[in-house]
Amino acid sequence: LKPLACLVSHLCPPGLHQMYCLLKEWPLMESESALELLDCNFPDPMVREFALRCLVQGLTDDKLSQYLLQLVQVLKYEMYLDNPLARFLIKKALTNQRIGHFFFWHLKSEMHNKTVSRRFGLLLEAFCRACGMYLKHLNRQVEAMDKLVNLTDTLKQEKKDETQKVQMKFLVEHMSRPDYMESLQGFVSPLNPVHQLGNLRLEECRIMSSAKRPLWLNWENPDIMSELLFTNNEIIFKNGDDLRQDMLTLQIIKIMENIWQNQGLDLRMLPYGCLSIGDCVGLIEVVKNSFTIMQIQCKGGLKGALQFNSNTLHHWIKDKNRGEGYDRAIDLFTRSCAGYCVATFILGIGDRHNSNIMVKENGQLFHIDFGHFLDHKKKKFGYKRERVPFVLTQDFLIVISKGVQESTKTKEFERFQEMCYKAYLAIRQHASLFINLFSLLLGCGMPELQTFDDIAYLRKTLALEKSQQEALEYFTKQMNDAHHGGWSTKMDWIFHTIRHMPNEH
Image (cartoon, rainbow, N blue to C red; front, side, top):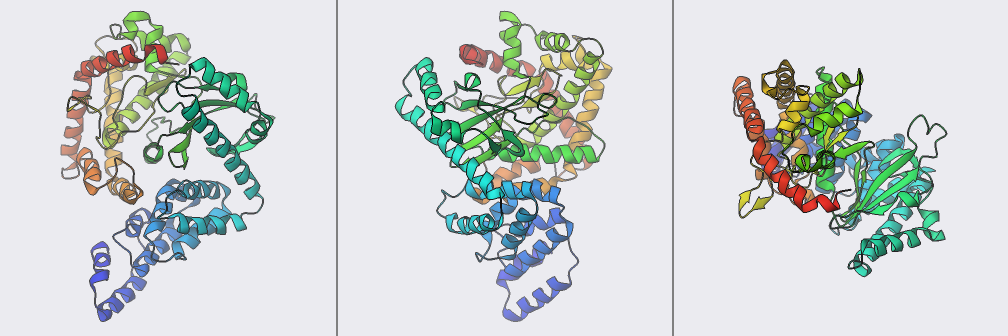
């Protein structure tokens, strides 16, 4: 169908009529395949309506939530402001509060963009007029976010040259004011509409040391079951960073995890919450009981910090998980490490220094900060700083092999390799879905997702020109390069640690 749909704009009226008749009789496609017919290459309303019929037929609310980011973006390619896709999304947003919540924020986050503000403004108005009582919750969220934007703007403009102590004093004084306290307490979290943010724990809030001065904010959980669930909610508020690439990467990681789970492969990924709420403004969920690799290595003294002792991470996990918990922690580390090795390789995630990889106390590993993807890696003197396909250092191998120094000769390492191979082949089977999801976002202006050349990187890492056996051999070579080239990663980590040791929280 795709080649025929591409011809629609070139057909004369009789041919066009025949094509439309054909579309009416054409059997519906799988919803994942139909997504492609909503991108900018298919402007014809009848083709797009056919794609929508496929989505209506095949998309559950859960699947729709997964692809909502792309579906909001492709509204930009619709010929008319009032169109079937817009009506479908509004209907879904009004009948499912979770979809409605994120539909609102995906639209609102682009209202600064003059090319779409009219279209998105009308959709927001239609949704807000019909969403009933939830509008009060959305208004409270917007009010709170506006206060935080104003506060961080003032901090950056008027207090940027002041000491950390002076900036913190300014932050606490402002957030203690009655108007701020009223706005910043007792509202639904934009990151997750299930979570209510209670009273601010001002003594736990701080200004982080990174360049854009993000705020680390801490709220009480007002739920009566909070002692059994979690007692507080920690969120990082960023003003000055474009979080859309992070959002996309975390969305893709979540979809990868679903594919693996459907194939009986539990790789325990941790796609934490991340939401862009405006022009370079957004929120990031803080994962509880987690520490960066750098923080853990620095606990091991100077040898650990300077990468001379590769046992520090294993000792830390062992110390946190005694008795029977140790085997569970190693299993959790192994599974999550396998998942992130495959995901970061396929997506070409860059800037993988030891402050961008974290481990929870229970052994679960996860990556953060996805500002560089599709092989747009940082360069030094014109050369790419990262010389390995993904991070697999001796520190990780020692944990996987339960402390054995010659870790690649153990049965635990063989099991880890097997997990990676299965995970890679599972994603390769769904290559067209991932290529479509990236293609649908080409028009939204992400700095590292501009052309089809960027997306071609996925075709390369998934080895789509090769047979399955050849693709597996290709990935095996990448894996060998990763752990044999681990020394180069360690060198990068040494320089990063020396630069950032005083600032690491």
